[in-house]
Image (cartoon, rainbow, N blue to C red):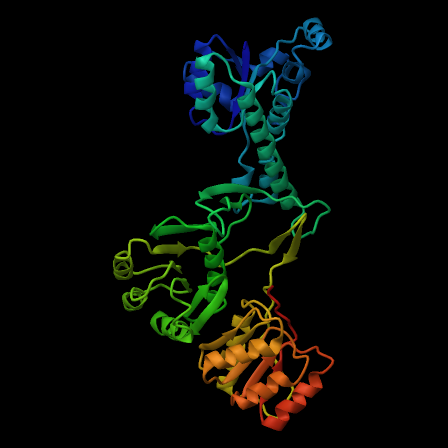
Length: 497
């Protein structure tokens, strides 16, 4: 190994590693800021411009894009023609490439101009990395500062192994594919492009997936902010696959509302939701909807949790409490439960699209953020003001319940939730039975028959909200008029499979 090329934006550990390379008799060539950084730290280094005899140009856009650089990287060492060409053109092989990229992942999320973001698109860096990764049999390529010690140890032991060089090359293409995906998504914002490219970075390994025999990790977007990316865990055990998945849904439900709201959730499905003038009353409404299911579940708030609420939360076993903030008193109380995961979230849900993996493919859709309070009254009886408030509340909850979904509501509280049934009347009976009593009923989709209305009448439910759109809408409207029930049509279906 004779020559190494170093060009890094993140200079963590590079002086120490470069010093080690010098001790191994390896010549270092470098560019721009990296060259100056090494010189300032008394590392013997040669400027790339001296090697290529071509000054960098276009404000640094062109520095290493030169045959002398890429010829030195890409030449196959046991190919006689390749090596003959290098000799004829006086090109020295480059046996190690150490490059990390302009921080496009970070800068694309910042509040800077479009033009400024474009300037953080690295060209020379990915090109050198890809060249070196293709030539991994002959070239050691390092794209992550965490790999300096890996390479150092193997060099001290004699040589960098084929397996390590292959793995480092794989890491390069993993990085550059994510980097290119981030740029693509930035330029094609809002489109459903021909090729689906996503860019995520691993935040943590998880103990296991949905079940202990499933391997799992958690990745976050490199280009977008989001509630499940930007949070702090203030207490408790490590988060699991199911924890993060459930936490996401509970947080979305709580943030449907402006006034204090609480969502209790189990297995990705709300088991209780309440709104009130304060977090304590909102929690009690959510708890009382289903005191059995909330045990061992997730509880989310859209407002700061106070001491009184914390005392109530402490009474049962919960996996997670997530909120935008906690009073000092609340934290002191909740932290007495050492395993309780306390999560402070900083952002409201902001995903624009969502993905569902199927065997051999991925389904992509816009996230269901549509909602309108402009309900159309279609019955002789109109909802009262309080009933209309509950109808709006019910529709905001039902959009997060698995279909077929029915939510029975009274006074800002989900009294009964029917979820995941294969027909609507079963979901209705389930919700009504759990509710005991309720003022209104909300449905995520239209009624194909009048049976739901008849069930509502038997349970003395006075108002119904549903999207409408069935060929038999009039049959359900007529049934409501027969029973003296008000009905509004929302015009928006909220299936959640």
